[in-house]
Image (cartoon, rainbow, N blue to C red; front, side, top):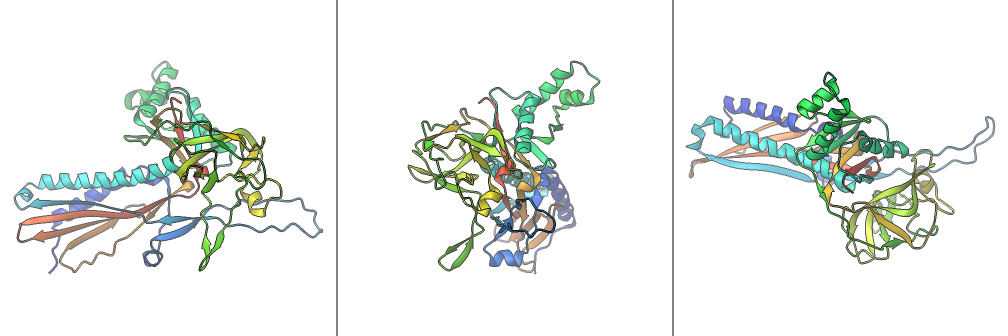
Length: 425
């Protein structure tokens, strides 16, 4: 006969779920994709999610046949249910005499799982976000946030559903700017900044304060160069939907490119850089922004190769349809020894900003049997993230074991729609 939860425990679980949902600050501001769990099991918990198409237009005269039909390349990225988080604890029959203690343990479990989900989302943006805004001074000015808005606008990122999560010190620095700028009380914006250190909407971003933030160490690589001189170089990546391999066609993840450089000595994953003579373009119009394109190091693979995001799609010489559609840079000064310029010159907290559709969370589900001698309760948040609570009594030790579980995945579908803001650079 299965163990069962008491009425008090069920009420406590409902309260726990409510608090868990309230704590999911970042997950409420990313896209949600609910998967078929049977299909996910058969696909090794991985599904390929599409990236936005970018089309090209041509001149056309009514009545004249069109001769410029183009092949459209659909890009996709793999998304995996890669996070399986559990908080286990046990209580003796003596400890259970204190019902308040049981509630505190449940609150602690809820807090940790919500933190795990928020950290996974933040890390996805912090590690892969390729829009990099370095600021020379400490946080404290509207213009700092406006630069994040500008880099998104210039590259054609949608101007709605934008979010910015700052470390506590950087967020409070911005709040201090609001207080100082107002010079007097009676203004709702400055009053809330003074009383609650609250910022709210700034430069098209809804801002949030993080009580934790990733740290990016100072880049140590120096004197590194890369070849951007022609059609066959590192600056002419060709996007492709699939690749032919042993056993047939496989999907290709076009968020990354392995490039050859003069040296990878002291280069580390996470480093942010620009390339001399390589400018960002607006993704739709393909016009150069006049600003250098920013990139991130994903991994260092050998003494002369590293994986970066995004790929360098210059569409040089005779470009393919896919290169023209997804071109993201203008190589204004081709060189076989173009300098790599690192942007994270000092160790700093990583503030992340993103457009909702760039980050996606995939709720998962455990098929826990309810008739195997273990009491089971399950419930889902508004975002579809499921919590499973289980209880088991051990008659020998007179202890009850509890565990609270959640299964989910996070994917950064488009690193060019998310980025990082670094102060004191």
